[in-house]
Structure formats: structure tokens, C-alpha cells
Length: 279
Image (cartoon, rainbow, N blue to C red; front, side, top):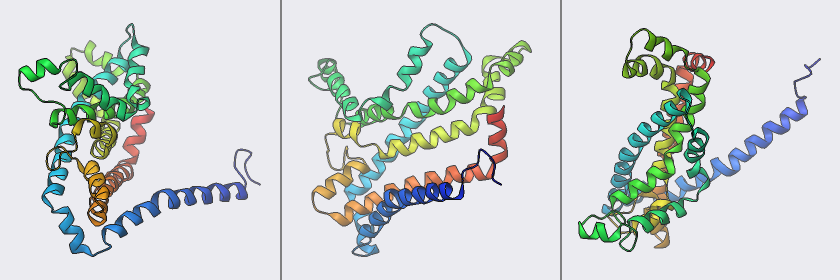
């Protein structure tokens, strides 16, 4: 006799089959296609495409943008989650909605907003031109666009976790004479470290793979403002399919590494993560 809340074998089999079918059709097969196309003319051709000066510049620029955007989003995410979960104030619901804004706004629109603000013909354009500051079609514009589309990831991972944990431990630490920083590093941070790490991993993966917003503000200048996703598009439009898929396969490998790290952390520290969530 099966339990009243347990599905029958047919339902379970259908659900499992549908899940496996979707994963194979929409995830595994596209990934295999990318890697096979990258190696279509051999490993040497793929390596030549990756070591091309334009490709190396795109890879380096992608890493720089992620290295700047992720720590800034880490700082924002922790601050926003701390304010929302640990304090009551007027406009709290509005702040939560604003944190989710990049999830609902098209990245292309986000890029256009920055062009309207910081472009040479934008609101701040005359002042920037007068002071010889270039944001659009330069590294600062890429960083700003990437920050916009990625800043909810850390905050959204931490807000429910910190809300569930409540304020009792922080209030107890403060009543015992701990300062704000001592309370955060000795009480709050140990309780949120796994959620924080997950948020950083997801933020980093999105930062390296962002296309829409970065495409608008980059100007597609080869060797200067093209990140890896933009470089893939340029190579593909130039019919350099091996190079395009080689760079795309590198992006896919970075995403797979992120997934593997997340899975390893869940497996290695499963008890601590579960205890943190229960707490």
C-alpha cells in the first residue's frame, strides 16, 4: 500500500521521463553541439581561435568586468539584505521591489538607460566630455551595465535566509556589548556564509555571460570593448564558426565549473547548510 501523499509508479515514471527528456533536449544536446562545433576542425584550430589577440582581449575584459562587478554586488547584496531582514523602516516594500527590478527589465533597456545618461548626447554627456571622462564604449559602461543586471542575485539569496533566522542572536550580541561589525562578522556572517557563496557564484556566472546590456554600451570595438559573449556574436556573424563555438565552449565550461562548485559545496557541507536553513 502506498502512502496517501505518494504518487503512483506511473505518475512518477512520467514525471521522471519528462524531466530527463527536457534536460537532454534543452541542456545536454545544445552543450554537446557547442563543444562538437568548437572541435569540428580539431583541437589545434580551437586553441588558435582562443589564443587569437581579439579572443584573449575578450576573455581578459570579461574577467575584469566580473572582478569589479561581483564584489560591488556582494557589498550591495549584504547591505540590502541586512537592512531589509534586520530592520523595519518606511518604504521597505518599495526597496524589495526595486531589488527585483532587473529581473523584470530587459537588459537591452538597461543598456539604453545608461546610454541616455552617460552617452555623449546624454544627460551627463556634456559634463563628461568637458572633463574627458568616457563611460559608454569603455570599461566603466560595461561594469555599470553588468552591475545592473546582476545585483539582485546576492540580495535575493540572502533576504529570505536572514529573515528566517530572525534578529535574536544579533540583539543578544549587542546587549552583551558587541559592536555592529563584531556582531556581523561573528554572528550574522557564519549563519549566512553558504547563501552568500551561492549568491556570489550565480552573480559571477551571470556577469561573465551577460550579453544584452553590455552589447548596448560596448560599441562592439574589437580588442577593446568586446566581452566573450559579444565576441562570439562577432565571430559568428563573420562566419568564423570554429572560433565562435570555441569561445562559446569556454563560456559553457565556466558555467559548468560554477555548477560543479555549487554541487560540491552542497555535498561536502550538506549538514551545515541544512542546519543554517533550519536555524
